[in-house]
Amino acid sequence: MAFELKQNLKLTQQLIMTPQLQQAIKLLQLSRLEMVDVINQEMEENPLLEELPPEDYREEERLFDGEEAILADRDEIKHVERTEELTGEGDGKEDFDWGNYMEDYQPASPIHERRDGEIPSWDNVLTGKPSLLDHLMWQLKLSRLTDLEMRIGEQIIGNIDQDGYLRATVEEIAEQEKVEPAAITEVLSKIQEFDPPGIAARDLRECLLNQARMIDIASPVVMNIIQNHLRDLEKKDYNHIAKKLKITLSEVIQAVMLITRMDPKPGSAYAEDKVQSIIPDVYVFKAGDEYKIVVNDEGLPRLRISNYYKEIMAGVDERYTGDNNKKYIRDRVQSASWLIKSIQQRQRTIYRVAESIVKYQKDFFDEGIKHLKPLVLRDIADDVEMHESTISRVVTNKYMHTPRGVFELKYFFNSSIHTTDGDGIASKSVKEAIRKIIAEEKPQAPYSDQEIVELLGTVGITIARRTVAKYREMMRILPSSRRKKYF
Image (tube, rainbow, N blue to C red; front, side):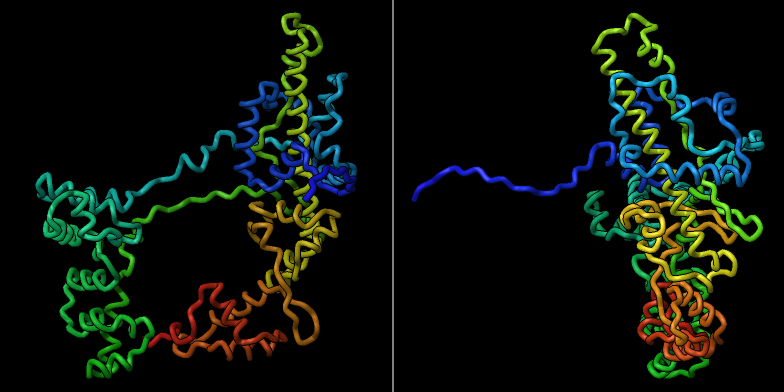
């Protein structure tokens, strides 16, 4: 068998993403906080980048007023569609134009001066409350325990989750502390007497039993239901409980009323409140019959290239006139220029997508969620002449402040469900209709999924029962058998 070498010509197409294009795509999908972090990191790594001081951009920028700013941005956007402007290709020439730099790289959006400089920030006026761990450790230190018991108590408390349940077994803690399990059980029984009632239980049954003992419920029916009939209690099958215990239904209901007053998650009262502050990327204001879009640039550092390095490149400082120094500075200038252009392009792209969304969903802004239209990424992509993947990146982790509240841009995209008259209705509108029907039902006689289907049909929405069940589960609404209230 002979081996030989051959040469073949093959013509193929290959998409090559330049580092500049990769950077632009990366910035496009970042959230606002991530964007600030990236800018700050670039400023640390690139000595040529510096933030424009407020006093400088107040003097050098022309303040736009409302509609003028939007129209100016819109006109500018129409001319920024070339790949070169997105990637920064072609900027690596020797004759860098420093004279036009200040005109080319001004911040993209107008600056509006705030008048509340003396008002303290929101995080300086928040008050904290003790966590569940702090509350339990405070009680542990007030208890008369030996050093060993104190150490075991700290281990037990350290393994209690935010709901108040012990998530480690007695054997695991005993092995950790190298003591007998009986010593762990003894300390655990003391901690289970702490506030809140039911704390440090290992399961729901133990949690409810401990609460019943602490609030001195002497009813044997209550204890029996907790001990043996939690599954029937969850299903609200009170008749089955009455039959098993050989008591009347009214006695079961009285016991259930006591049990429902207990807390299945005793630690939740001390759960740490996670304060999440959302800063919108886009503001939508109504002016007459039209909606105006303003991209929020507040909080984003406004960048420029340092004047000090500008003087170096101009040859003013003779200490840095060497070729290596100029090459390094030139590379840093190019990197800084790409970053600034990518940030500007990101803001313009967000504006165009937001403008298209507002155009498609104008009825929602006027009338509410009932008039939310079906919308997919391709609709916006075709309107702004971009790829669907670009639109997907734009709407990720971006928020819009509207007269109807703050919404993630993804909120406005949803599938279509056909009505009896042939028109389409947004799936979110159907969910809202289901939620409203359930909110208005009688607690003693909740609607079944089939009844909800029939009620939707009266308003022209035809969907299957399994679709109602799917939407109900997505909204975390229980089935009718578990929504029913007996008292």
